[in-house]
Length: 589
Image 1 (cartoon, rainbow, N blue to C red):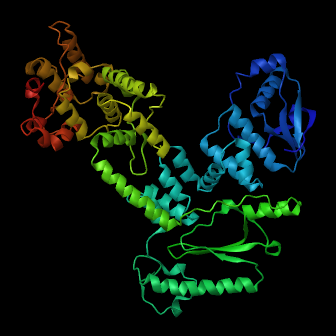
Image 2: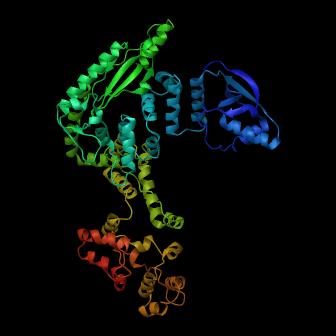
C-alpha cells in the first residue's frame, strides 16, 4: 500500500466509500464501542481516500458511525484523525477494507468472494491476493471462479442449498447455461441437474443445434433434423458437424492472423477459458485470441487476452527485474490418464469395501454426517407453521431425550478432538476426518452414533415415522400429553365429540353436541384432570396411539393415512387398525 498522509478531517466531509467492503449495508450496531469512544476519543485512525469533494471511508466503518452518534448527541462537528490514501490506489483500498472487515466483523463467504473479485479486477494478481490473506493461490483461484457465478447461484450456495460438486460444476458453465440451470431450479415440473450430473449436463451430450454452427447451414451436406417444438434444428451426425465446424474455425483463425493478431490459440474441445486468470491486452500490445470450444458445438472467441503469468513476466521485464516467475508445475500424467488411474483405484476400493462390512458401516455413518457429491443428507429442521406448535414440540420430552442422546454421541467425537456437527457441504477432508474417528470407536459406540445421526435425519410427516413408532414399540403416552396448544388447534367438533365419547361415554358426548367447541373441549380437559369425576391422565386420542386410529369415519387423517400405506409391510393384522373406528381406540392403545 502506498504511504498515507495523516490529517484531521471534519466528520461532515466523510462518507462510506463504495470501495468499502460493507458499503450499502444497513447501519451497524456500535453499542459496544460507543462508550469507549465517547469517553476517550478515537484511538485508531480511519483509513480514507479523496473521492470528489469529500473523503471515502475505506476502513473504520463502525468507528465512523459511532462518531456520528456522538456528533448527534453533542451537536458539534467533530474532527476525525484519518490516514489518507492516494486516490489512484484502488486495489490497496479494497484490500484494506477486506482486511479490516474480516479481522473485526467476520465477513460471509460470499462477501469474501466479491471482495477478491474486485481486487483482481483492480489489477491485483492472484499471488498478491493470496499473500495478503495468508492463503494458497489455489484457494484464491477457486474463490475467483465462484465469484464469477451468477448472483442467484451464489446465494443458493451461501444458503447451503447446493453441494460443492454442483457449485464447482457450475463454475464451468457459460452465462447462458447458468441462466438455463436457474430456470430448471425454479421450475415446478423440471429438475435441475446436481452433482456429477450437473457437470455432464454442462460439458457432455452430442445434441448440437444449428445455432451453434459457424458455417452456413444451407451449405451443410449432412442431415439436419427438425424439432417441431423448438426454434432450432439438430445435426443428426455429430462427427460430420465437427468436420464442418473445424473447417470454419480454421478460416476464422486465418482471418485473425491476417488482421494482425500475433497469436491465436485454439483450446482443446471441452477445455475452459478462465477469464479470472487472464487480463485484457490490446492487439497492438501483443494481445492474443483464445478460442473456446464446448462439446455442445459452441465456439467462443476471446479477443485481446493474455494470461496473468505472462502479464507479470512483461511487467517485471519492463522494470528490468528479469523473469523471476517460477515455471508452472507440469503434471506427470494427462487428464485421460489421470481419469484411468483414478477409476481403477476407485473400482479396487469398491471391491474391498464390499467385503469389509465393519469398515463400510463406519464410512456410511461418516457420509451421513458430512455428505458428499453422492450423499445429500441433512438433519431435520423443525419449522412449524405456528409459533405455538414450535414451542410445544421444542419443550417436549422427546426433543429433550434426543438432545441427550446427541450429547452422548457428540462426546465420543469431542474426546478425539473432532467436530461432530452434521453438514451438507462437507469436503473429502471433513469426510475422512469423521471416518478416521469412527475407526477408532468400538462397534457399540459406532451404533450409538449411527442411532443419533439416523434420528436427527429422519424425515417428518410420512410413513417411515409410523413404521419407526411401530417397530420400536414407542409409548406415546410417556412422550406426549394433551397440552394447551393441542386444545387450541383442535377445531373439528366431530373429532372433539369422538374424543369425549372415548374418554367418557357416548351419552355424555351426545348431551353436549350442541355446545360450542370451546365448551366441549373444556369437558374433555376436565375429564383428563378429574374435575367432578375420576382423573384419566393417561388418556390419549386415537391420533396419538400406536398405531394411530381415526376419530371420524371416512375423514382424512394424516398419520392414519400414512400408516395405512405401509402397515402391510410390517404387520398385516395391525394394518387393519388404521381404519378402526372411535369405539376401538382404547383396545388399540
